[in-house]
Image 1 (cartoon, helix red, strand yellow):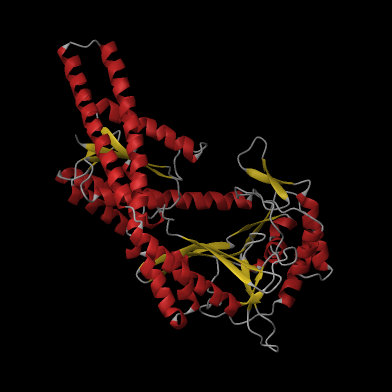
Image 2 (tube, one colour):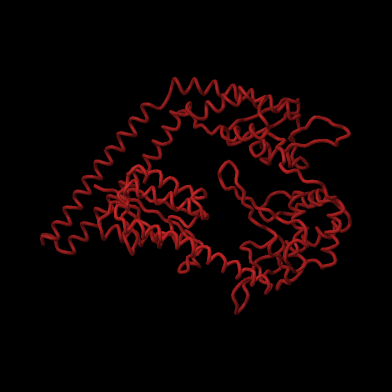
Length: 513
């Protein structure tokens, strides 16, 4: 029996469901597709839920998985609420999607129309629909930007999360939001500006707040960067900023890379008078900016910053769980770099020279790799893979039987053997049984995928680990960091009182049973 797949994605431009959450919108869309499948007798084998935002295929992992399966001809059709759910990106994305459906012969099924790629007119109509969808996307995007600019000029707050010191407040009898002073956070912001204007540094202010057990919004520790962000935000003098954060696109290795570039200078972006109350005077805010400029003299920015810490983003303190950062002394002393817990003021984990920790981590990787290879080639997963595959095969046989029963039910109602009530009751039972089998198959397929990943690990991450260990000295820190992130999820570090360095690895390879 032919199998179908559902693809569900909420668009930022959904007009009918603008006030609903992503989950609620997807639930309503799924109900529409379920009705189509039920009315037409489609056997839906899988459902893909896209909950991330992104106009391009590269930013949407679920559609990548679906297209990979569709390209093999696995499904007779894909059910979507409308064709724009598949792609509203650039021409390359649209051409790729058209080719995948055309070469695989997979139909695109929407509530309004079924697009058959084997039909020349359907193919042209589908491609034209994608083109017009892209045009509509750009038009709506321009309108949104104009609308947000207009709201900012009216003093409304545009963000979905209020900055520290405030909470969002709905404007009465009008669309939009403003800010209200948070009773506990507001005084903290005033204290930060007070200390800074008294010439305390950002690090000193962070230490002061931590020493006085002043909580951050999310319960973590205050850092100098958090304090600096507050000091540079004109929202605290009652202003709304616009255009300070921009997306910059560039081509790297044939792919489009997007980065967010934020302006640091108040004079480089638009400011509007806000509807919300100020926490500091404009004079005090601008005075703080003068101090910031004095303390940070203009310096030539390197075209490309070189990574200095090969363990950036993966090395954490085993005592408090905070990040382990690289520190250096002044140029005059020119001592080797050290690794230190960023929470060193409150955490008693000792610092150590970077090269000493580096040697320890490499030694631990060698020991782990040797042990894992022995386990992989002696224990393995062959028996588990075979048993799981057999269970999936039995489930699919049961699905075929149920599909045959469903077809028979349709025949019997057409022949008048079943009344409409009996038919509906029978179809409901069969549908529930098929859904249960689909859920079982999905669980078994997930297990099989995990087992096969472990069984074939030596064809992927193990060679990467071997490459890292063999070429580590010749690599740049950026290359080391990138490869380490492919091998381990995190590394935890502790330096004992006797000077012993202890590292714990959390590899991405699954542990063998």
